[in-house]
Image (cartoon, rainbow, N blue to C red):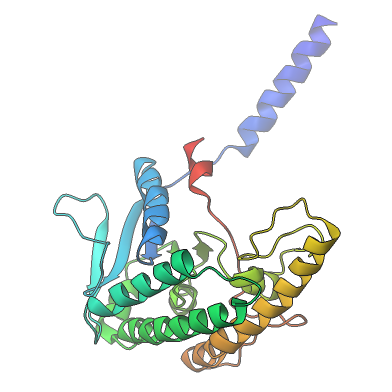
Length: 270
């Protein structure tokens, strides 16, 4: 009996030895977003730096919170945009004020989404300037291409990170799940989100819903799908033009930008 047990342990040990392989730390490029999203991403970055990975963070000269430090362990690559810090500051203040002081009610929800849409359009116009500033900078793109990055960490609230990753030919990872009603995650990332069980983002519902709340959740999905496609749909053409091929994102045909991996800062603590 002891001999048989010893043989089993030896076989298990040999099996584990066969599976052993070298592990190397990676070079990671970062496409961040301002405000609380940067705080969330910075937690991930600092933990991965502690584990031996190296980071290069793309940051515009109009950044508000992402301040390069002289003795920082990460590298900052600054690119120049045709606007000042007043632009992102005004947009962030507008969104925060709308969310805190003008929460939607049954009578005001359409006005709320209309104002949110206006702010989103202005944010995306700024976002396009940032994207253009990187993609049209041939010297910067050549430098990034030759840096040998293993992957790109992107905050999806500010589109272009995944586009940059595709241009550089490297995989990308999203730092969080972000879109209203999970529209992008459902139609591009194909994640399962049955409205009877999964509350839509911004619906303020939980996963324990009454029949009336399930109806509200169902309506929330369709309403937010409409809002998302109305204000974010133009990115399909922008990406298609940048990549030189037609991209789309709908129920039947996933986009080439459909890779969706979520990194949670708390998972990195283990």
